[in-house]
Image (tube, rainbow, N blue to C red; front, side, top):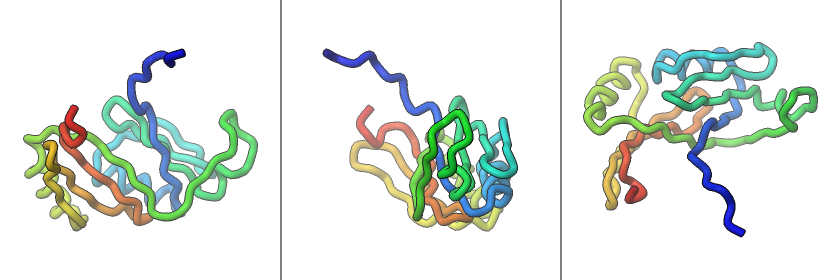
Length: 134
């Protein structure tokens, strides 16, 4: 039996050491809007039409919320889609915020990625459509 279609990734989660520090980065550097907060557990941020979930790395492993316990460790990765015509503006913005672009890649199938690091050393990619050929 074929499963029903999935429309895409609705939310992504990163696990952080300091919720306020991480939320400040995603709000001030990437322009995300805070849409939810539990100061002991999480900050939720609107990323376009989707949501980035920032969780205190230790708090989400404990039972007690509607979602089952979960967690992650190490330097994780997340990518956010940007319009191709904004690449120069993003480069300039990162420079003005003293956020170094770690790597820039133009992919063989198309599309370009800019990689930066957040305060927890997660790899944050801003990418134009086309890297997967669709």
